[in-house]
Image 1 (spheres, rainbow, N blue to C red):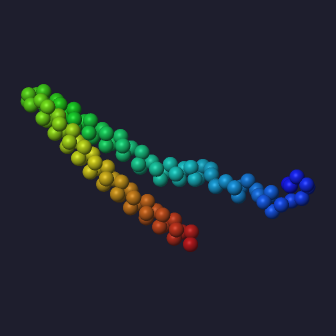
Image 2: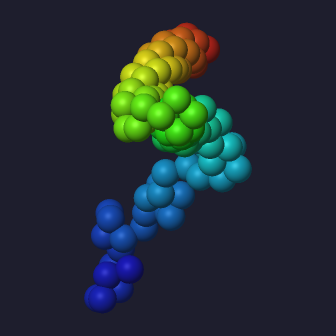
Image 3: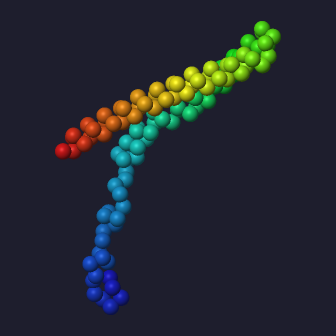
Length: 107
């Protein structure tokens, strides 16, 4: 209400119109959409670390220090990056399909 007791057009807006819809359904949908991406960084790092230590172990066995360790790190980075990009592209395609289906369902 206005200080002089009169209503102005903007003084009476319900709270529901000011905030975007929230709740378990929108939060669950957000988590469902984001979940496939959450493990990608860990997967990339794990691939590099495993290949690095495999190369380090082979260096100790074959007495070729540090060449197989370096090679293992590069192979791990290349393989991990390939897997990462492949997964991101596939998930992007799935997200576009889901959005298209949602749009079609709303029309």
